[in-house]
Length: 186
Image (tube, rainbow, N blue to C red; front, side):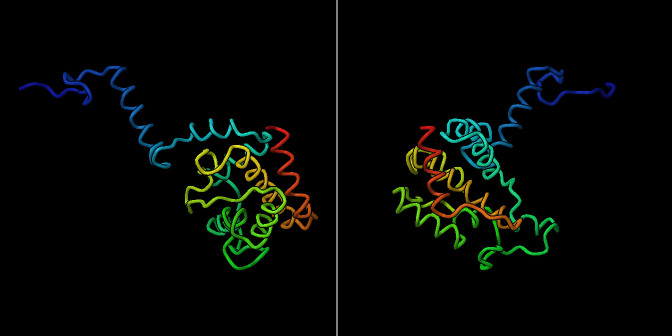
C-alpha cells in the first residue's frame, strides 16, 4: 500500500508546474472578463475610452458610467444611503444613470435641443449595453460620440448642481460646451 501524497491535479504526473498554474490563472481571468459582458473586457473598454476625443475628466466620467460607479439615487437607495430612489428633477422614475443621461425630461429636452443646434442625434441604444455601444463606430461617428458623451457629462454635472442647490448652465450653454469641447479636441 502506498502512502498518501500531495498531487497537482493539472498535471498528469501530479507534479506542480508554474506553467500549469499560469494557465489556470489566465483562464480564470478570461472567464471573469467574459462575465462582464460577452465579447468585451474592462481592459478593452479603457482602450476605447482612452481614444475618445474628450477631456480627461470626461474619459474618467465615462469609465464610471460603464462600470456603474456613479452615485445615482437608485444605487444609493439600494445601499440604504438615500431613502428616496426617484429622480429629483422629474419624479417619474427611479434615478438611474441611464435615466439622468437619457430618459429624464431634462435629458430629453437637452437631446431635443442638441439635435436642433448641433445636428447630433442620439442613436437607438440597447437598454443594458448603451454606454459601451457609444464607444463603437458602428452606432455613430467618433465625432458624434464625443459630443454625446460630453453632453452626458454636462447633464451629470447639472444633476449634481441641482442636488446641491447650485445654479447650473442653461441647456443651450451646456449643448454648446459639449459641442465646442468635442470639436476643439477633434
